[in-house]
Amino acid sequence: MVEIRQLNNLCGIDVGCTNVKMAAVIDGNLVSRRIASGDDFSRESLIEEISRFYESFNYDFDGLGIAFSGCTVDGFAVCHTSLPCLEYLSADDFKHLCSNVRLINDSNATALAGTLEFPDAKVLLGITNGTGIGCGVVINGELFAGGTGFAGEIYGNPVLDDALNPTKVGKLCSGSKILKRMTEDLDAEKNIRIIDSASQYMGATLVSLIHSFNPNVVYCSGGGFSFAGYFDLTKDFIEKHAYSRFLKDFTMTTSTFDPYSGCIGAMRFVRPWFWSHKRLVATFFATSLFLIFFLILLLLRFHHLIMFDILIFV
Image 1 (cartoon, helix red, strand yellow):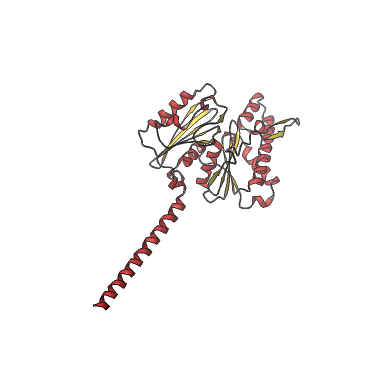
Image 2 (cartoon, one colour):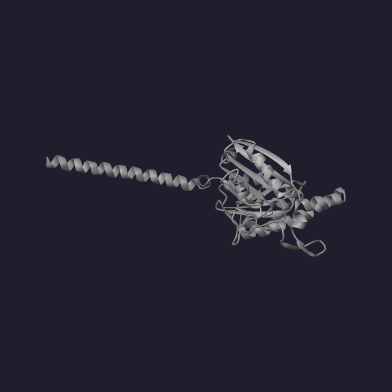
């Protein structure tokens, strides 16, 4: 894939609540691995497993990007998370591997992965749905994290549940909560109702985001969207309830990188500056070449005038 080749010589990690996904792109090929995490998975074990994966290639990577369930303000240290293995984690924990290490929220990473598939999107929303739900926002190719770096924390948006009690929307439509409710009673008809209800809550959340950001692309990733009918029902809800003018030049799709979209986005985040700003770099070089060519013409012209003056003098 062309998109993958853009990430050559990079390594990406996605630390979730149930597993850790690891990927690397070497000579245009994606190599991946997945291990279990959970509450008993320690910070030391996380650093050890990432180091083992990274060093297994005996390869000099250009960067290591780490996506995770939680928040970071500066891209170098975790400032909020519910996972014990991520507490106090920082880029310095991996300086023995690489000097170019960055941390990024997993939903933001998904949004950046989306820019590889939809590079011309003016506004792209990356939606994750797994243990929780989250949103990443990319505007004109650049990540938008809000005034203090926490934009997209939609899990805690308050809504009314079926009993009209206020609750967090993530408790009603995230993949882990859907699975929990479905396994409590293995009734097929009840499970259909659970999916239908969850898709409406997710749909309503996305309609609000669509009306707020007017995106070209809503890019979805995570196991929650894999429940039978869930994605299509969510999409149907949006088509029925969003203002029609917001659905022009609009695409809602699932990631082709799943289940490694977080890893891909983390690599995109840590990608060297000149790759992330290739248009600017191309413009700079084109302008530089033009200026060099123009200076050469001036020098030739100046040289010609001097030679002409010498001939006249002689």
